[in-house]
Length: 208
Image (cartoon, rainbow, N blue to C red):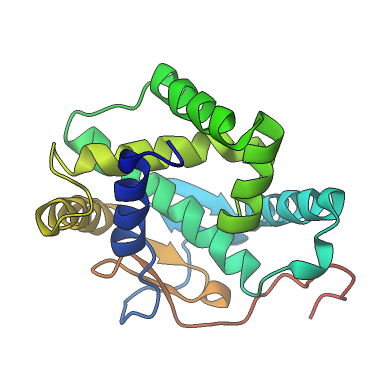
């Protein structure tokens, strides 16, 4: 998928439907202590965020890229974990699913394009902040976004509008609450806003 036209359309869809983060929003303190966010009845724990960040850092260290860490790693992890649940709800609301077979085919195609599964995992870590343990989750989300375009080109205005509506509807139904450490969730903008501080310290730094 990486060098196919469908992949280019998918990346465009991700850029327009997901990457909007400088947004006006609502939100409050999560309903459960120790939560990074509460999405509907699901709780995203701070421990989950820490584990994801650690996995990304460990992958960087193994590749010799530990010094290249980008800021906002914890917020990116929270945003991606929330988005995964929003996409899942949007798909369920429309009676859509993403099969493991679809994930395997897309992942295998990209691995062949870049040379190996290991190279694919490293590329996704470096470019998308995806830990090696969640590559399937990344593809599930991407394929889900394409399906939410409802047969339209995801990079077209119509496809983008369909994706946005699906995600806004799902986010509204889920009543997302975010720990203020990470900002707040903008349902209409489909992203985090607010605090730009990364609560989790960078590698080698003491916790604040």
